[in-house]
Length: 73
Image (cartoon, rainbow, N blue to C red):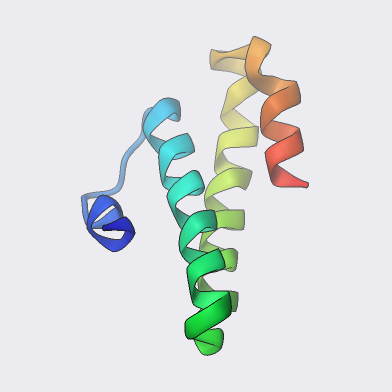
């Protein structure tokens, strides 16, 4: 289900990007217990996407900065 949620064209709007990060983090938790070899790739993808979000949030949704920084930590 999580993989299906992530099977779409690259999104540019922040809410969709934030949903993708959440799905990737959940997928990494699943992989941690069953597919350890896929954990790092999934976490790296989530980190890259979260970095893109953090670059855009100050301009588009400044009220979201604290929660997005916490998610990135």
